[in-house]
Structure formats: structure tokens, C-alpha cells
Amino acid sequence: MPDLPGCVAVAETKDEDLELIQEAIELHIEALHIDGLPVPQPSSSSEYIDVAAA
Figure 1 (cartoon, rainbow, N blue to C red):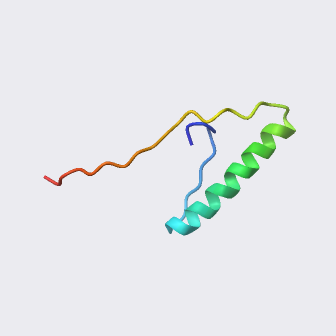
Figure 2 (cartoon, helix red, strand yellow):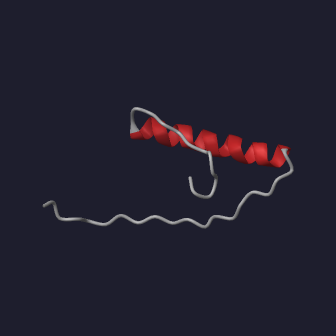
């Protein structure tokens, strides 16, 4: 995640990955609070585009 460097999740399915990344984000933010560090403001965005196959 660009806004939370080092915060990642890897799974075999999309549903499992979404569950794991939510947990990873929560733990990452909790660790920032414990360490007295600021939680960065969101700055990334994403979009999907269609690309014709060659």
C-alpha cells in the first residue's frame, strides 16, 4: 500500500486477500499509534482501464 509502506497481504483468493489486508491495515495503524507516529493521510488512488489485447 503506497500510503502505508510495508503493509502488505498475500493470499490465494481475492476474498482472503481482502480480509488479510484489512487486518494488516488495522494492525499497522495500531502500531503507528503505539509508537506515537502519525497516521499518514491517504494520497493514493486507483483506476481500472480496458486495454485491447494484441
